[in-house]
Image 1: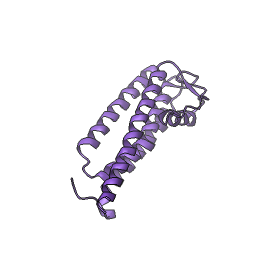
Image 2: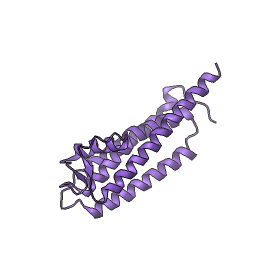
Image 3: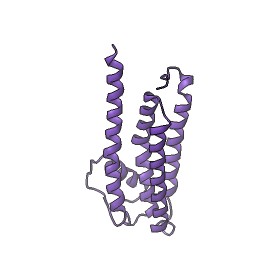
Image 4: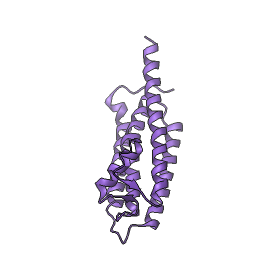
Length: 167
C-alpha cells in the first residue's frame, strides 16, 4: 500500500482526475439531453447506453487496479458515485428523447437528471417513470446505485476503522 497523500501537491493529480470526471459527465449530460426530438431516439440512446457500460467497466477496473491509496480511492469513488454516474445515466435517458419515449412526464434535461438521482438513490417518488427500453436502464441504474453506494459506505467505514484502530 502506498503512502497516503497529505499535502495539496500530493492530492493534485487526484483532484484533477475528479474534476475531469465532473466536467466530462456534465458535458455528456448537457449535450445528449439537449438533442432535438428528430436526432434523439433508439439509435443514439443505444450508443449512449453502450458508452455508459464501457465507462462503468473502465472506471471499476481503474479503481480496483490502479488507485493504491485508500483515501484517494474513497475520494474518487465519492465523486464518481455521487455526481458522475447519475449525470451519465441522465445523459443516456436524454439521448432517447422526450415526448414520453424514455421517462414519462420528463419535459427537459432537468427532469431526467432529477429522475436519474431519484432512481440511483432508489428513492422512487413516482412522479416520473421509465418507459420502453429505459425501464431496463432504470433498473440497471437502481442496482448500480445499491452496489456503488454500498461500496462507498463500506470503504469509508474500513478507512475510518483502520485509522482509529491504531490509536
